[in-house]
Length: 251
Ligand code: PGA
Image (cartoon, rainbow, N blue to C red; front, side, top):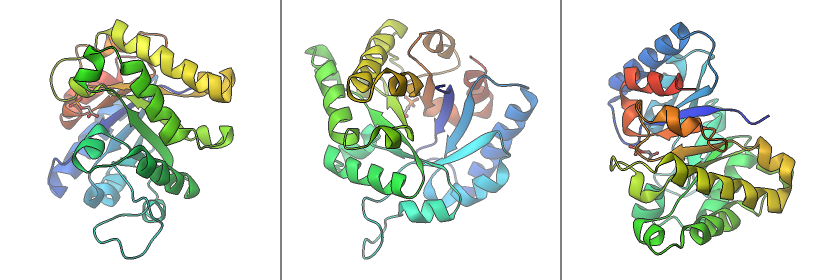
């Protein structure tokens, strides 16, 4: 069974003390919300991971925002998947559009990173999504398909079970311009079909596909009501515990 997931991507925000406080606030809100219909994940910066892990209980999982493409060695400034595993971090985000755009991470690099993550037993939240010009010229299906094929389709069907896909149209990230639930559903259904064509319907139906891009406490409900939207990857609205918990409870 695919799982509903709400994941908070903190990006490069919060001091260590602020991050620990946010984690405690999210944890307290999750604890008092009772039975949830989704898994909850927070993805703080690398530096915060171990302290945030200590600040949350069993109902909140912790994710890195990135990991290295190489296993170990002379790669100054990098953090390996094995290091994340050794710190008991169960997830990493890979391929966020900010990594693709600002740090030149190509599909080939992202495929290597995914390989490292899976080899170390991490689950991967793999981000894909088109830019505004690609939406406007109608190329978005091709873009999304290419990102999946080149970043993920080297995996076996068994390995693919460790993948969560996050569809994040770049034009919706941090802009306040959310994709409509129809626009998001259309692409999510296409992503699921693309996965089904490669790995079969069962794997596709079991894959959680999250929407990201200006998802907030006001629109989460409508987005999550779509049949192929299994939750959200939340940026800005994950930095305020009250807003984040409203999204978590939107299911
Ligand atoms: P946003 O970011 O919610 O601030 O648009 C989403 C993301 O980049 O994961």
